[in-house]
Length: 62
Image 1 (cartoon, rainbow, N blue to C red):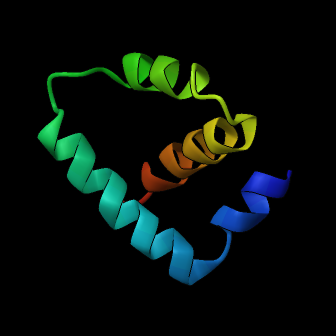
Image 2: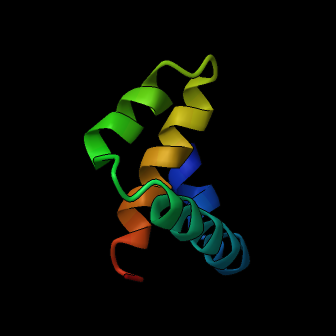
């Protein structure tokens, strides 16, 4: 829930969504599942959780 609260902050949400969407546009050949797997192998669980939350939130922006 902690990582979800971070994403709910509008300013951070907007900035991260711009960054994520730019990264996704550069890596369009990669599928979401591959990106999530990369996020899972990150050392920080909080980073992985935040990345998942941002991806879910950014679906509403695209």
